[in-house]
Length: 154
Image 1: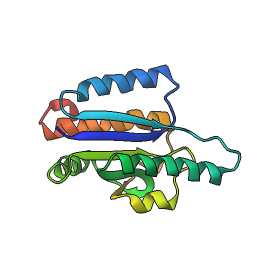
Image 2: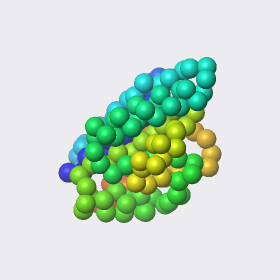
Image 3: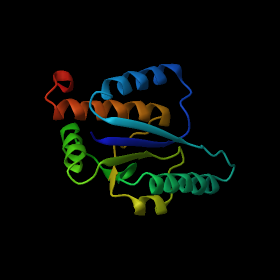
């Protein structure tokens, strides 16, 4: 069973987002081992300091959770849902752990980007980070459905 870690900055504050996340975690539990790793959000007045601290937390986390690292990033590649499914399940041939990283609201340092195996862009639009976690879980579930020929993805 593939293990997917979602490594993210900050905690969920909105109840409706948490409910959606819990629903997709429940659906995914039949197919993958999912772990959400919440890292400390920094609120320093100096944005560069916050980015560097949060980036350090991310780098520490991926060093502890060895796997294939995918960063959600505006500089990344846009792909369709079937391509995401192929990517995830293609990776299971060579790795047992996939880390999907959502940086903080101010972004990540170039040091984080350099450590990534793949940069993934969901959209050129900006989404709240809490909502992005829900969207990511929905897309992981969609990828599972595509891989297993479950009608959800249509």
